[in-house]
Length: 188
Image 1: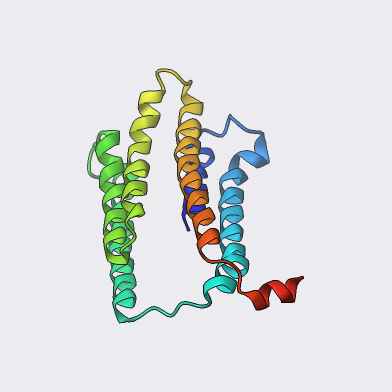
Image 2: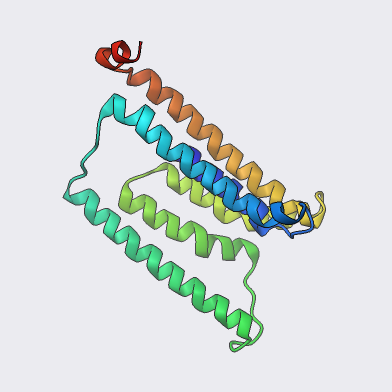
């Protein structure tokens, strides 16, 4: 999950950066290609690494309630973001702008903290903080890194940090949960 989330965050860089950075088909497709790669990695690792070691997990009532609450929080967040986007595009609400740090924390960190709380996934608090800081870090890094590349650099760096954390957890998981003997004999 962490590796997929890291790849997802890293894909924000090519998606947010201006299209002049990459050649024509790649400038639009690199973000979705990265998301597809991350999703394929997630599905394949679940099938070939996790299920053979710990089997299929059936969640109890508390986890299902947590997932339902998460869906409600994320749905409310999407609606609010859509309304603010439409207000900004149509100029109905006048010209308003939030500071990048506040914008990132309000619309990315806060919802991810709710998700982390409801799903009892403590690393997601850190990931939410990193993701919420992304706009601000890209803005600050524009003093050092030229403007089209600052978002690309920032989100690739943040995604890379999360992927490294995910790889660490994957290695721990593989060491802790060895393949059952019948799986080793079947493959060999």
